[in-house]
Amino acid sequence: MSEKFPAQGYKDNVLSDCFADAQRYFLDHYVDVDRAHVVMLAEQNIITGEELKLILQAIEGLDIEAMRNAEYDGSVEDLFYYIQREITAGCGDADIAGKVHTARSRNDIDVTIYRLYLRQQTLDLIEVCSTLHEVFLDLAAAHHESLMPAYTHTQPAQPTTIAHYLLAMAENTGRDIVRIRRAYENMNLCPLGACAITTTGFPIDRARVADLLGFDGPTRNSYGSIASVDYFTELLGSVSGLLINVGKFAQEFLLMAMVEFNVIRLPDGYVQASSIMPQKRNPVAIEHVRAIASKALGQVLGVLTSVHNTPFGDINDVEDDLQPLNFSAIRDSNRAVSLLGHALAAAQFNLDLLRIRAEANFITVTELADTIVRRENLPFSKAHAIVADCVKRATAAGSGVSFDILQAAAKEKIGRSLDLSASELEEALSAENFVRIRNIYGGPAPDETKKALAEQREVQSKNNAWLLERRSKLKQANGKLDAQIKLGLL
Image (cartoon, rainbow, N blue to C red):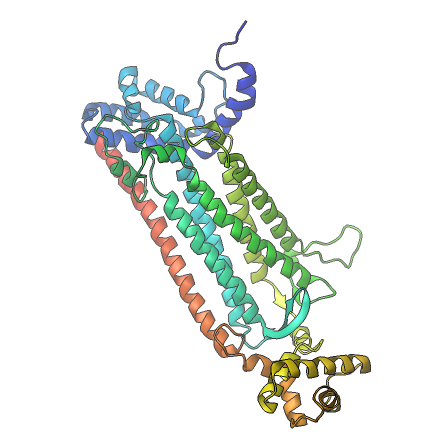
């Protein structure tokens, strides 16, 4: 014998979970959509003022907290029908309550509430990214003169400064913010009025509903309003770039925190002791950054895999079961970025050791080769050969590059001594000199990093102004909707 809908297996494995997710994520948004929609219906004379008043009284009388905590019993299919049942009970007139659903569908409602939840998460993520950006900038501001080794292929390469190093991360983060902002702007369009997929014959005002809900406007094509998923895949794409950057940053700082490196120290609040080894100071905060970011990236990839070959239309694959994974991915992204910002803001660099390493391992000798080119008018290839031979001789002798070693290498490679003094050699091998003369646009010289910092401060200011304007617009829209509700209840 066939079971009546919903069958127990369907209820247990689909509907109950989806109902709980909707209670958690969408209840308030469902109600706001109802409020904005009926206000528009009355303004368009699709329902009467008296019908609007009765419907609004029912909506405003909903016990939201009781609804949020209600157990799913299978008496209705989903939260949408549950809310409509409660509105009907509040109206006391099923015919009037039924007019709430004029000129709309669960299809356009669903893609709207998904955007409503996701856009708030997106603004929160942009805010923590902006905070991390500021942490990088504040640290850089204190370290324009602080020398450190730069690494390529995980090996010491050339001297730079902490400011130069951190500004690279700041610029990455600034670009991440711009990408996420663009995703927000494309997401913040309202699908309501698309209905099932082809709009409606009723004279609705889609722009009005969009405005009341704080959107920048309605989506243009009704088919795409329902079928397109790039409102969240674009966001996830930009977030994936952010997470890759965060993972790389975390890996850097974990290596720097190793005792063998010993160039960054987290305060006690961000390290964990061992239960057996009393000496341990485990930098677990940064480990959690990496782990959470990896988890978030995994969720992003899971979403993209789930939707990449689904039909272009209304389909469950991109709806109730999937959307919480979007939200979880963004939440974990927020956690990873926020934790990294807090940990780094409290960290200290081992400046003395970094300075020593900025002149160790022969990493200044690129400038010696450049000096030979300038002083001797030799091609760089020959200067490179001389200096490479110097490094081999010095390594064998267990010393640095001395004046005698330089001249011996020159005689070996070009058959003559160099017209270079011992003091010029000393300056050429100085990390301070190496950094100072690299004052090319984008270089590590303090004057250049100060300019770069000022530019990034301007980027930060613009991002913060954008965020403030966006939050203000949503607050204003909420106030406008509340005002229209009060007017409709008169």
